[in-house]
Each structure stands twice: as structure tokens, then as C-alpha cells.
Length: 261
Image (cartoon, rainbow, N blue to C red; front, side, top):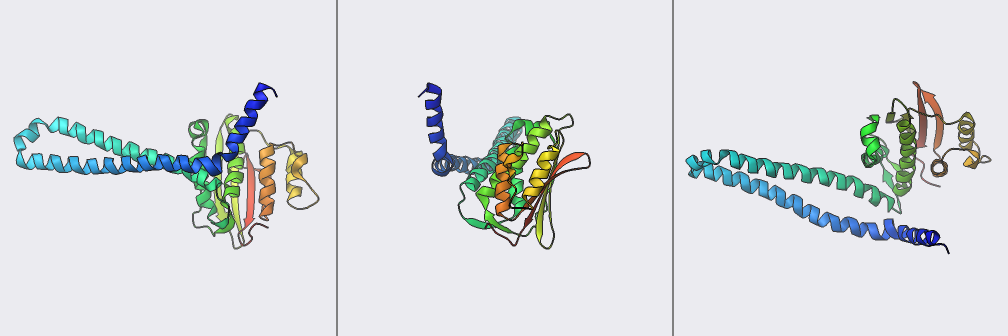
């Protein structure tokens, strides 16, 4: 076996265990010291505030002399607390994604909350975070939808990633995401600037969700998107590609009283 194939085989063997076996331990080992740092930094903030107050009360002249130095110490501790909180938020966004991918059972999911988490995770793609104009309007008061969180996390990540890559290649670099619902369906709309899906692929995809005789494999779009479409159909969802307001649009309609078949 050639060296590059041997390496690829070993890499595949490693990644096959990463999400379900290795990553939970990695996240756990990061979480413990992070929680300790946050706890200690908050405690240190209280201690320095109490100490400065005592100095001001018992040694007012010294407090005036050390005023600038004490204020610098307080500012530094405050900065540490803010950075700790910021790091915790990023850790939460990353760990939330990976814990979702490790989910095995059906559970009731709020699609808007799931998409909010996906958008926070998408900000780890720095070009997406800094290079795209994003308009996200999520209705948090959505009916729950029974599904496997790992599946929905992956399929929506793939659609967001698809739209992201198209928007990044465009001049205007626009991305739009919204959620809404009616008495029967949850509707997710993703709009993006850039290259459109071909008319042939639009017809194949639209027909796929209307007939069991049509397979999406004939479409020329990205393989990951086609796999996402197959999973959507498992939930009796419909996906439609079109254009709206001069942008490409992906409509995902999911009946929320239907779980995976």
C-alpha cells in the first residue's frame, strides 16, 4: 500500500472514533479547568473590590496615593473576567455542536434554537464571521419537532455551509436566514448571493420531494447537499430551490407533527 494511502487509512480510522469516543473526553478535560478559571477570576474580583474598600475606609491617605495602581489592578481583573466569559461562550458553541453530533436518540427539538447554535458554530469559519453580511431572524417561539439532533445538526450545517461558500464567492457576500411556522409546518428560509443552482438541478430536487421514483443522484450539486436532502425526506420535509429578492433561496418545509420514518 502506498504511503499516502496508509496515512489516509490511519486518518480515517482515527476520525471514525473522534466524535463518539474521543471528543467527549476532550471537552470534559477542557471544561474542568475552564470552570475553575472562571470561578477563581470571579472570586478574585470580589476580593479586590473588598480589599480596595477596606483600604479606602481604614487608610484613606494610602488609598489616594495608590488610587491609580489599585484602579489598574481592578481593570486588569475585570478584563480577565470578560475574556473568561468570552472563552466560555466559544467553548459552549463548539462543545454544543459536537455534543449534538453525538446524539443518538429522537428528541424534541426547537429548530430556531438549533439554527442559532449552528450560526454561532459557523462563526468559527473566519471568512463567514468577518467576510459576509448576515441577516438572521429566528422565531424562537417555534413548535418542537421530534427528530435526531445529530441528523438535523449535520443537514442544516451542510446547507449553511453550501450557502456560505456561494456567498463568499460573490461580490455582495450576503446571507439571510429566517424561521417561521404555521399550524402544520416549520419553514426555514436560507437566502444567499452568488452562483445559482442550475435549472436542471432545481427540477431534479423539486421532483425528488414529490415522487419516490426520482433520485437526487442525477443532480450536479455538491454531494453533501444531496445527502442532506435524503435525510430531509426521511422527516417528510420538502426542500425547494428558487430565487427571491435577487438572491438564491432554499426553502425547507418540515411538518412538525411527523417524526422520522
